[in-house]
Length: 275
Image (cartoon, rainbow, N blue to C red):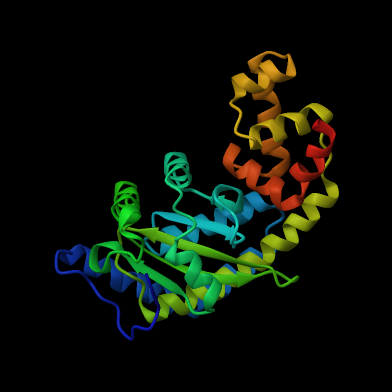
C-alpha cells in the first residue's frame, strides 16, 4: 500500500499492446471535460441509492476496474469490515473470508485512509502488502484469487464530517494522475450525494415488525432457514421479507441490506425490542 504520488501511468512489462491501447483510451476519456460534466449532472439527477450505485458501476467500468466499494471508516475497535460497507460489488465469499481471517485490524488501506486525505493505492504484484507476516500471504492470495491485485481508495466525508471512502480495484494498471484526479472528484461527489439520499430514505422508510425482526437476525449472522425457525414461519416467507427489505432499502443483496440498515440506525434501534 502507498499514497498516490506518481507523475506518469505505468504499464507492467507483461501487458500487451491491447492493454496499452486501452489505457490510452481511458486517459482520453477522463481528460475529456464533457465526461466529467455529464457524470456530475447525472449523479445530481439520481432519485435513490440504487440509481447511484448504477452510476458508480459505470465509472468503474469506464475506467477498467472490476470492483468498487463504498464504506464508512470502521472504528478502531471493529473486528469486521462487513458492517461498514454501504455498497459494493465485491464477491460475498471475499467479504466472508476477509472477516474470517480477521484482516481488518491490520489493514494498511484503512490505516492510510485514517491518516491522510491523499488517495491510497496498492499493487500486490509489484509491492506486496505491509501486514504482519502471519497474515500477509493470506491477504495477498485472497485478493489475487478475486482478481483485485491493484486498486485505489479515495477518502470522503459526509456533511456531518463522518469519514468514509470509495475504492476501485481490478487487474488493470494503477490509474494515471489524470484518472486519479477525476476519480477523486467523482468519489467525493457520489459520497455526498449518497449521504443525502440515505437521509431521504430514512425519513420515508416504513418497515413491518416482521421485517425488522428478520433484518436484525440476519445482521446477527442467521441464515434464512435459521430466521424461519426463530420467527416460526416458512423459509419462503423469510425470503419474501428479505426481498421486501432489499426493495425498500434499495439494496442489491443481503450484505448491502444489512450495511444500509446499520447506517440508518435500524438494527441498533430494533435490537432493543428483541431482548
